[in-house]
Image 1 (cartoon, rainbow, N blue to C red):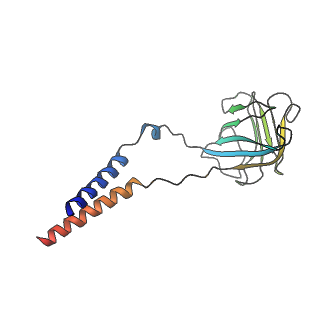
Image 2: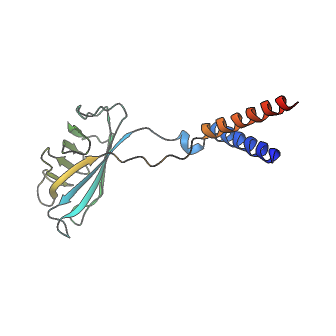
Image 3: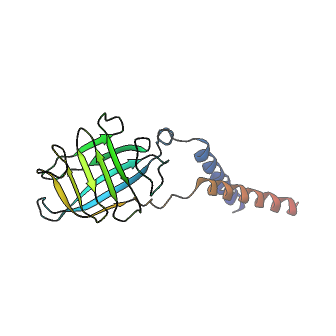
Length: 183
């Protein structure tokens, strides 16, 4: 029984050490950013009152409530509808135009993102419009109400490998002290 417990403790320590000592390749390639998901009720889409979505990605240097500028803008992607096809605007867009801010996550915000591939505007009363040609909010466009930016919630994290390492080392220490006190 004691031998089995020692083996389990040693295994937990080694697993914890192995996980913390060997980062995966995908972890090294992650670019930190603040992602704001947009959802709105589309008044002119088919079906009527369907939900449209978009993603605004800003650098971690962006502070909620401050103006969105080219230095903190990474990209904007509109996922499209039956009227306006999907498009993306990136910081490398030569005709990039930005205004407004995310004033409160999960609230109505005034944001303008415009580039050569499309234009998007959300108003602080929840109204919004988007199109990919011609003047902003001109036909053809998507427009609607209940436009809200929110940040995705992070999922439940897996058990921390440091905890496994600590548990394994504590168990080994306990068994070593126990063995020394018996001798």
